[in-house]
Amino acid sequence: MPFVSVSRPAIGVSILKARLGEVGIPCDIGYANLLFAERVGMATYGLINDRLTGWMFAGDWLFAQQLFPDENRDPYIELLKKNLQPSEFDTILSVRDKITPFLQEGLDRYDVASYDLVGFTTTFEQNLASLAMASLVKRKFPNKITVFGGGNCEGVMGIELHRRFDWIDYVCSGEADYSFPALVQRIGRRQPVEGVAGVVYRVGGESRLSAPVDQVRCMDDLPDPDYDDYFRQLHDSSVAAEIRPALLIESGRGCWWGEKSHCTFCGLNGSSMTFRAKSAPRVYAELERQKDRYGMGQFLAVDNIMSYQYFRDLLPMLKERNPGISLFYEIKSNLKRRHIELLRDASVLAIQPGIESLSSNVLRLMRKGVTAIQNVALLRFCREYGVELAWNLLYGFPGETVEDYEDTARVIEAIYHLRPPGVVARIRLDRFSPNFNQAAGFGLANIKPFPIYQHIYPLPDESIGNIAYFFDYDYSDGRDPTRYMAPVLNRVLMWQQNQGGDLVKSYEGAAELMLIDSRPDHPRLNYPLNGLQREIYEFCDDIRNRASMDSFAAEREGHPVDLSPLLQQMVDYHLMLREGNQYLSLAVDTNRRSEPHAALEPATF
View 1 (tube, rainbow, N blue to C red):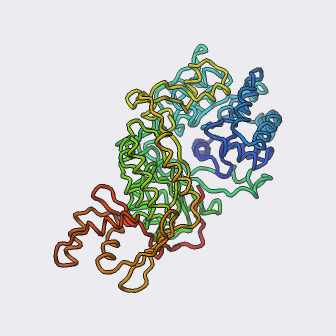
View 2: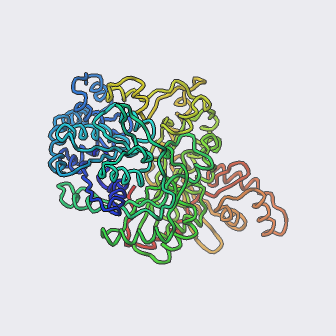
View 3: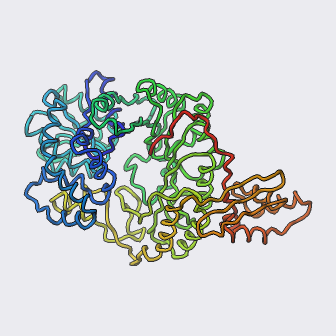
């Protein structure tokens, strides 16, 4: 159901379809999000799904009127008017009249009458659309079995949905690779479902969760996701020409870093933090099978974090065999040059590294296991090797200081020529994150669901608290992070608006290295480096500590050399970055960039 991207198939239910096929149960997937995009237009769908997602919940609100028709809509409408452009406001209100016809058309389009069981996958803002359609299914066909699953059904959220909305027969909480086929088989055989781990069911009108979900242990045992329904419906869709699809692949679940040190703000993994990954041969074979099956080579990995083992096996395999595939991965940011070069050579042409901050102290507070200078090195390596990246800058962590953001502002001034963050935002409080589970210990107080939930669910506060995924909070010490973030926000805005400023290397001759600086707020000078100056600058192409630099200079010159004046000048002119006793050269070597597989387009984010 809406609202979720129409440019990619749904991998969770596509795996479940393949799992059901293994036990002989026919299944079809209806992409009602495509149908809704047809009815409202791609621009309107994009406004709701992209522009308003995560803060206005307009998608959920539009469908809430089907479930709670007597509720007063005026307070939310005033919020819309206050926060949107007039044209956007008018667009959202115009969609309200299209909800009921869409739901009825969905029943007919997907021939719901012919199925025994109708399942709904719901993550983020799919809840109300799924609830509305499921309610209509039950009213029209009381004997149909309805099942909910997906991210919105994890733990207490799934139990509360089941408790509050009696037209949901069952909920699969957590990974459903084993539980959903087992549930369908038991329903088909008219057997009790109580023993199926991870399933919420009713006994005497009370919602109960059976034993904890049985997680997948060997990822290689999973079938390839079956995307046939998506591509068939996309082909027949009137908006197909406006959609650039990509294939999804899942090579791992959980987070190997989170097992060691759960990042304080991250709530993505819920109860499934344990990291499991497919073997390299299995991933490679699946990529080839899916490429051949669907005739496209652009893949987005849905993994929370790429397995580090893939630098040893999968990526060299992709590099050597060159199968005509490009990939996007989420990845840890403490990577070295050789890692980025290998990613490029293996056609992992786009990544989302967990950078999150340019302050080592703030990174320590969020348990990232990486330093600011490592994050800057990654930004430069990606620029040099032509690997696209997306990252966000987060702030508002209890314990951060004004000095942390003064340092961040200085770092930004030196790296205007590298990729800026896409989003700068105060940390959000997500269910399942350490900040949520141990709020008082992290200096957070007055935890409450986003107020917007009250405009969507006219339910008791306790129920909303159980259904919600996003929460508001105060700081125990009363801080206001926006005050000390102002200098950083101003610099990020300049960074994002940078019109071509750069800091690059130019090799004019064997003996001279020219640094050409055209960054904004810089003197726009060229800096010629010769002899030891050049050698030291190039030595710091990777992060180096002062001791190694002193040893390097002494070996080159045959005697100890005081590098302090040179290094201080480099740092003052923002040609190098210093953090403690570590240094990194900032100029980009554009000669390193090449396109190993020029025919491939980079995977879209």
